[in-house]
Image (tube, rainbow, N blue to C red; front, top):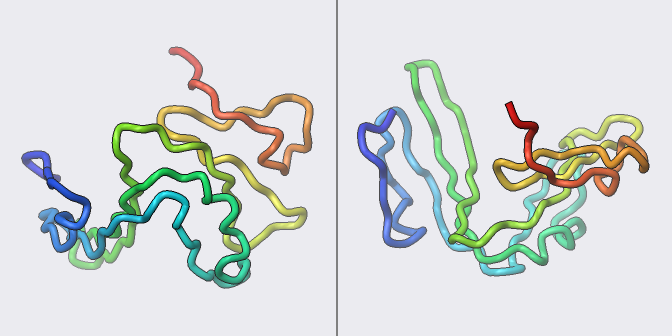
Length: 134
């Protein structure tokens, strides 16, 4: 754990940051509407699924390797934005189940909530909503 918050003036300043039990391996600005989804096994080729990202504001994808123990090698990616809210994104598993399943990826603290009408496997049948109180 960090004993004090890590603060950077710019996104790129985070690259190489020592986290104590890990390190930031990459951080660079993704221009508004310019994010390109990388190719993935079983997924669409680069450029095909990018319509889902065209309305994203500028953001900073931060990649890090976390090593909380000597046998750990945990890869993470965090998308940090300026104080504007990111829109909900459609999400789907890397290896598609049958039938295909998708859900919106909601900005924190919102959760995907079924609208009660559409198909349960379709992201369009869900909306981002505040979590239940309690």
